[in-house]
Length: 72
Image 1 (tube, rainbow, N blue to C red):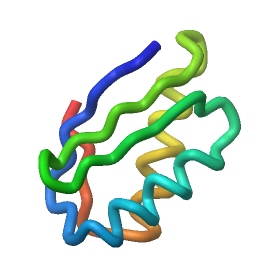
Image 2: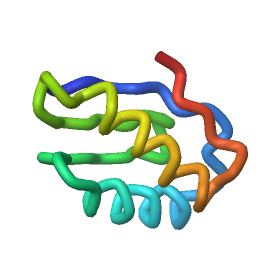
Image 3: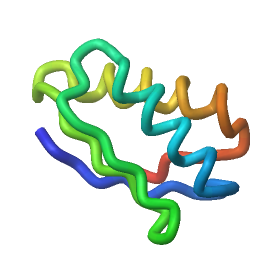
């Protein structure tokens, strides 16, 4: 499954790149792209684990940018 999630309060392009690298390392992530300009993340992961992986991605992102919110 590939899904685009709107991000809120993403502070800088450097933080977006760090988040992208951290999320890409998560088990089950097929592909992830974070665009700072559009404040969107595209995440691809297996359908049956997508919600768990998305939750783990949000947790990883908050370690880098504590104010970021994933709008679903």
